[in-house]
Image (cartoon, rainbow, N blue to C red; front, side):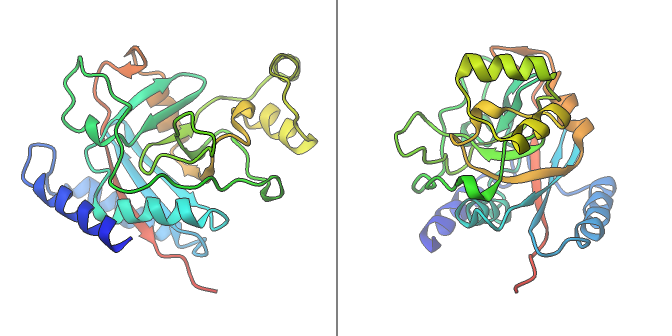
Length: 243
C-alpha cells in the first residue's frame, strides 16, 4: 500500500502546474466547508465531496466493504481523481469515471481501459450485507474476470429511476434474476439496476446531489462519452470515528 501511495504521489506531482490544476475559488471553498458540517452528522462512515463541472455531490463509503473504501480514500487523498472525466454516461443507467487516461484525452480518444498502479480489488459482496444497486449506489467497475475483482480506480454511480412493477417483473423473467422482496421494493420505489447485484461491488452511496447525477446522465453523448467534458475533483470531508 505504501508503495502504491508513493507511485500515486509521484504521478500526481508530475502533473502539477497543468491547465487542469488551479487554486480553489471562494465558491468551492465554501462548498467544502458547508459539506464538512453536513457530513459530520454521520461520522461513523467516511464522506467524500465530488465536485464536478455540473455541480457537487456527496457520497458516503460503507464500512462493510473496507478494501474498496480504503482504496478509494487513498486515491481521493492523493488527488488521483482531480481533473479526470466522467467518460461513460448512459441516461437511465449510470455515470462512470476514474480512468486516469481521461485527464488529457482528446475528443476522439477512446477512454475506459485505464487503471492505477497496483492490483485489482477483490470482490466484496455477500447476500447477507443487503447492499444493492439502488439509485445512487457507488460501485466499482470491472473487467470480465472470473473473480469479479474490481478496477482499482474506475467507479460508477447508479442513476436509473424507479421501475414500474410490471416492468421490473418482465426484466426479472427475461434476465432470470432472483430478487428478494426487499430488493423489489427498493427498485420499484427508489430505482436502481437489479441485474448488477452480485456482480459488481457497491461500496457506498450518494447522499446529496441527485440533481447533479441526473444532469450528468442526460448530457449529450457520442458513443456514451459526453460531448462536453465533465471533470471531477474530490475531497475527504471527514474521517470516520473509530469504534
